[in-house]
Image 1 (cartoon, one colour):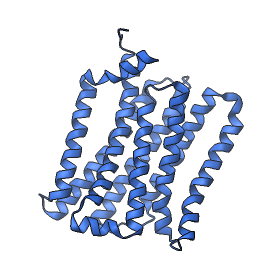
Image 2 (image 1 turned 180 degrees about the horizontal axis):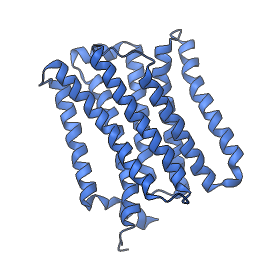
Image 3 (image 1 turned 90 degrees about the vertical axis):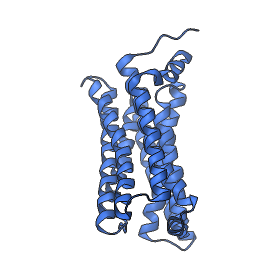
Length: 274
């Protein structure tokens, strides 16, 4: 296993991986410059910013699709990656729909919207993916795994409702926004649990991205609830920049994790000296 981890760490020497790392850094740098300094006309600047986020989501969907296509129909992981692929394409569609809403409504996107339906649908398919993965590992515990998955969904749906009710601030808008960070964290933790089962390796990096999503979404929900996000965006301070840049980084980290998995499937483990 140590050999595998070292091999993964050296995967950046492969041209496709090095190119993606470079592309990710360029996207983040361009996003920060456009966000902070608005060098383009305001409408065009917003279109480019939103397009960078949408492109970040697209990279994960494309790489997940390549991994899915690598497996044959009789391969058990194929069903896992089918669901991961669908989840990522739904998230890409959600970003694209949000971008369209924002363009035609002067950045006033309704909540909930079809974009939210896509994002929530993505969480559902991530759940299916983890269910199939855990069943592959422990088939005798199939019913327990199903019960745990349903229970996790109920808890994730309940937490934001309880919090907003206790703070006397429950609205559909706030509920949807506070649902996302807890859903991100639940999916991320389910993925990180696999890290301990497999003792590290290629499965670790994608789920770190989901944990970053959780942080970004939680900061956004809090900033929206306290009305700090709009004020930050208008005044140009670092809070909104941190939230939105972290969101982009989460998509790219997720894609980097998938890319590491694809490299292992495509090229195998590189020989590593002890």
